[in-house]
Image (cartoon, rainbow, N blue to C red):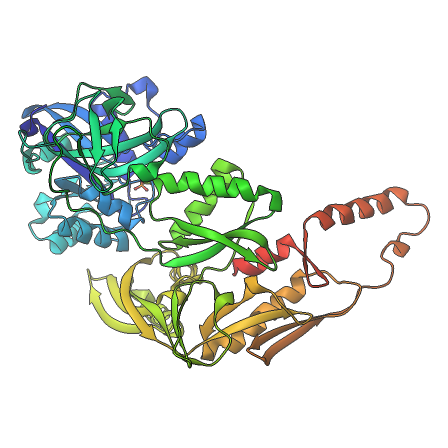
Length: 596
Ligand code: GDP
Ligand code: MG
């Protein structure tokens, strides 16, 4: 297909504004998915993966559109299921010339609408503003068209109105894409250069690499070269997803498709790398993506210690398609063998642990998320701490913690409550703006460490779900932080150590000791639970010793009850971890770490 007849676009939206549903209608209207094969959220790969039990990622879909301007190949590059992954979104954006900015006509602009819009503008994309869900009785398209026009410039009349549900307006949208989004440009005669924007491991086909061709042409059966490593591979298959993989005779300028080389390790097909041919390699690689940097660390431990090798294998597999995931082995006195994992944020953490449990059947304990602290000791040593239990015990000269610039969008009635919340989280107000008469944007500089601890849940509950949040790193800042340890019978439970602001240390100590008192069953002896900063105890509870004989209570006759009790105890034993002499149920770790 000549570049003039290609349009590459993506859909950007706040979560739940209808991206997947609109994509469904486009697949149907362009005929690439027959009505009888249609099912909701066709491209939602998490669904597909669950259904078929293998990894297939439909990252880019090619749809022929015979519209007003003749037949054009539309490549819809799907930003993965979870749009909150800013780095994934920006990868997809770099492969497009235009973006549909989709906004729920009953909700208006939300935090991720803005965040994604800014990313699209940074990538110089042509933006098509679209209001979705106009079939809803609560839709107020006039109001939100004005809001959108206000945001991106232009007239409210330029804002398209569609319903992904009924299909209304979708054909007009496809025509608009052809008319407004520029055709891709590139040098067809130059050596091949293709940008890798995603790379997935598939159990049957090996690594599937998704590329956007910039210059030249790639053919099946030729040798390709990865420009960063100079490694060469035989190209076994090249094709396009439509939306099922369809082998083709090659990819030219502006086209989007996939490559299969039979390689088994995705690290050899790195996202952001440039693919060229081995015979006539290009000299200059395309500008890559900056490697995403983990922001939040957490320990992942198998509940059943014998699952450790499976966890390692599962992480290796996830890493294949998730460049942002980092991990290294770690041992915990309390939890045994596990991995310290780095994530881009809380959602990333949640999704990785959900995938580990759903796709790999692993039962895991996730320790409390921690950010990265830079500690300078009195002796002048510089230590990077991603695990609170590694926080140096000696004298500390200074500590810095990462800060974020947070944008919170909310109805004006909640401004007071939310400001209060941000204040208790050590936030500094940077600004406040009215997006419309009712909607306000609050901007805060706030420690990331305060956000990773249930901030979002608090924000949602304090605003009846009406607030949305987005944030980006804004550098490090020195703070008065201390490590609080939790001790059971004098033994430190490493998984419960936490780095908190000095003013909050006491409250954290009280919370954790009270929580553990409720969660840990009585033992044969009294168990003191303490919270400490260094050698100083700041909070204390104790679990009284168990009554001598629990079974004595069910005297005589009721054998079955007795047996049940014994069986229950045996069952319970299996899920106990020893901390010193104290038996702690796995559930207690999970509950104590989950927060509320
Ligand atoms: P995404 O998170 O942006 O992919 O949003 P989804 O496509 O999953 O849609 C979120 C919810 O909104 C789902 O319950 C959809 O059925 C619903 N929805 C999406 N588009 C429309 C629409 O045009 N009209 C109505 N009434 N509901 C819609
Ligand atoms: Mg979706």
